[in-house]
Image (cartoon, rainbow, N blue to C red; front, side, top):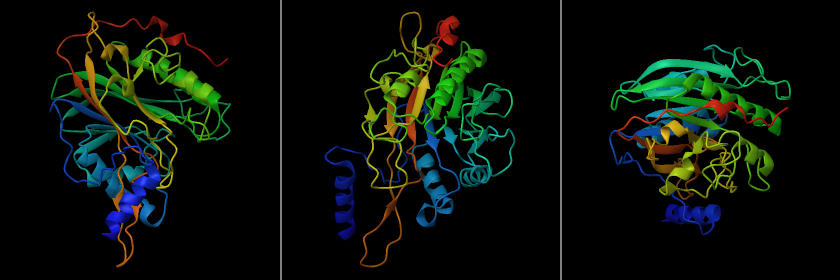
Length: 355
């Protein structure tokens, strides 16, 4: 009874009067369509933290979420090679593509790894580029004061269940207060999607590290609108969404879970900002045919807020913990049965905000 009272009090303290889905159930989340694709973006946090927030504990929570929600493809940010190896050992149904930010498979450096179910998907093509003026080699923008390489991993997947092919691009933008670096990163990602994946459905996952929420980390509404655009419209003026180039999947379904909550939690159950750093975008080729019908439909969008109980002593309330300092964001996608018209990408490199 004490634990129940504690959890109810916790929900009220964290989320005020807003209805928030705090999922601590274990059954696998049901699919509306077995041929659907469950795509997630998940900053799993590096091998940091201590005690109940250590990676040795958190890795089992990541596994629990991935398997409960039955993710098909996961764009991850921040895992190092030892963490990737841990997850593959816990979840042998997955494999991954990607190298670390230095362009190799050594431990101690973050990856933007894309996990995928190896029995369902084949990797047709894969690659990586760096968020810099020299994207073909490990490097970073000269304006960047936090001198670490940042990259984008991409792969062309073939789905054995549907026969469809599509690209997934996965990235992690700079976390420091340097909007110009994020803006130039967005310009480069936009150009690269045009270069590598014309006439394929494209999904872009990532932690974009910018916010339009007042008093929050990396708060800059002007920078946010330049990068992602106005999140309330389908065609925005941001680099990523400008000219309808990409669309936030958040805007393509009415079936949302925790839409008004943030996607970061800082591993702190008292963290209350509704900051959305984590997004899943798709391109126009995935959106429509000549009649305006969607080639790829989004049936649901979920901001997965899942708390895990820890062991408590007799007579003590049960503490609860997250799997990472970010919540995973997941969408259910399905391909409609027609061949979409080709998209003209001539304008896709024309949006330039940086000098």
